[in-house]
Image (tube, rainbow, N blue to C red; front, top):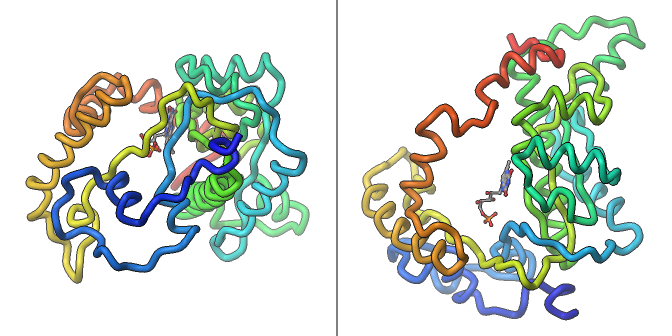
Length: 285
Ligand SMILES: Cc1cc2nc3c(=O)[nH]c(=O)nc-3n(C[C@H](O)[C@H](O)[C@H](O)COP(=O)(O)O)c2cc1C
């Protein structure tokens, strides 16, 4: 049970960074003597899990995760997000099918849909008989998506701290209108992504997935793409080894990005998102 309740075993800072950046990161990564504590260790230990035990979550877990989510910063304190839990097996099955049959959606003990929710403010405006002129604008839509993402990530961090594991399900956006119908969403709300939460099945391989080196993503004063080519070659080699170890098709990061962003078919219907959002009440001017 220990490995379930504490998925962040005591590992050194050096080892945690090695897992996060791989065995051969460029030397311009984090220094060996930077700040370190349990929270950082837990953050660096993140990995998505796609195999869950059936064990239920302790009473109050959902509400604790939501309290963590509500503790995230939120634009102008408008709190333009909501979450919906889905327990009904038939609805879970439909959601899993929308998501290309991702079985973990049916297996996990807690499935949460995170909603960019402008409907609440719309109702507020109507109740107060004030037209909310800012409602249909792209900026407001982005605020709702950002709020939902920040809230969800706080819940993910809290879940990790409780010994749970998660995986986001962006594939809810394959068919947001169907998802909205299944969940009875009002106009001007849509599921940005789902989130599976539960105890990791020890059988499911779930190694920490290395990331791009810091010299690729962190710029100082001015954007500098110079290290990118060198770093990408190193990262490709790293991810190829990671994929082989984790029983995924052993391919490079470059190849994965090309597959994911090359053909329009890889969008799985999400190329229709703008039109679907319009049907869901998001005018997005
Ligand atoms: C918004 C979002 C949507 C995602 N959607 C899915 C998904 O539908 N299915 C899935 O298996 N993983 C999904 N993921 C997980 C990513 O694939 C994963 O985070 C990435 O490969 C990095 O791996 P790691 O989380 O284990 O570090 C999603 C992640 C994010 C942030």
